[in-house]
Length: 230
Length: 193
Length: 201
Image (cartoon, rainbow over all chains, first blue to last red; front, side, top):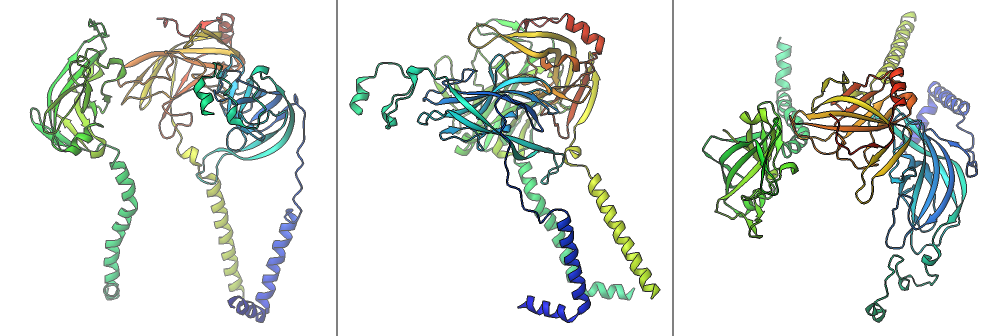
């Protein structure tokens, strides 16, 4: 109701009315000039193949190969039968200081495969003198392994689309004015075939009842008690 | 002049209110930070004069002895001299907890040494954790290596224990022992020598 | 009429000037990083550099093409690099209370920072591990991995908390290596430098 009275009031004063229309027209003109009325283009990301070089603001990346195995190159292995999905990448750091954030450049999503919250790898390993954790120094190229965990009951993947994510550096963020890397944006999707490096005799049983399959690490003779319980 | 006094008179209650409310507002907004600071930092010492007893966390405390050693006892029982720049200061204290709360609070007590410059050393660093143990090294309980039983401080009974500190040799003269229990912050106990 | 228009002009000019002043203040106000920046304390190799909570004295710099460090179980492991290993010997003393040297880095002439390596291998001599007690100095090493062409003019940074030391001292110790010194050292860089051998005097 109040709005109607205000509009009516405005209409009775032609000068105010003319000025408001002029202001609205000016705003619309500026918005159109800056591109505000254009449709948002549908995103189609480039799909470079494995082995090609992708440059983000933080790293120069060259994804090499992907494989699934029992343990990671640095020897990390879980005893519940989880496998690991490894993506080997040559990374050169473009950061101004040593950083271990290379994991935030890769996202993937596959059923049964877990990493960090957004599909980032669980951890990174350095393939030189294999060790856990990859502190990448500026300008030095290293081959790293990004590690995801594959649940014991999940199907072994044979191919995956790895999304490469680009972050932007802000000297002053909007919260506290401190600097940091923000706004992750996908810039490429790399289709990678996944090699299966699991030793054949430890392949999980194809039975649909997971409780019946014994844990992979347990190689001892089954004790009579367990059979009775089942 | 009369205009001002008239104005003051007409506004006097508001001015009085301002005089009261401004400091209260200031205190309300700062008190949270202040109480958080006070609960984590040592601000008010309870100073125990030489030879006297002090009352802290419902317990009676007394400094029995403070000695500086220039050698330390190794695992096999032999004694080895320390490097010339180091000493071990041993502080022997007696505490008599008076209530059950005191007994519980003692479990988290921390011993420190401070000097006039404000430097601080913590008790029983791993480098010199006592091996040849004949006295408790903790305010509340202790595993006696000889009887292999855990002994504990008890209400109303004095409990003697000793804390060891690794300090530079030139600081042994003027270090002051202190005891802090986190629940009693910002108060802490300071023993004069 | 002209008086009214003169007033309107004066108002408009004031508005524009205020807007310009606000914009200038916004652009020049330091961000959080600058407001809480570290206090640099500069020094050079061989002298004791005193920060607020700790002091550091660096004695010498060794270069190596590969390192050998013991492993908890098994034979000692060799660590290679695509650049060169820089091992800095020194002593640290805490000034006030027990503290941990959590950060050490090498800043090159072009402003890049190479953080000390301390989780790839295990060595009890690393200065970034183990607490330091007030007034008691402790000798040890810091290990960095740097491309050899960036080593000249490098400065060692040390801080109690992190590279972005906030409102506390950050020690900046020049290693005193110019191009010819780097070339000479590279020619004599060892392979298999033992990280856990007895510290040379």
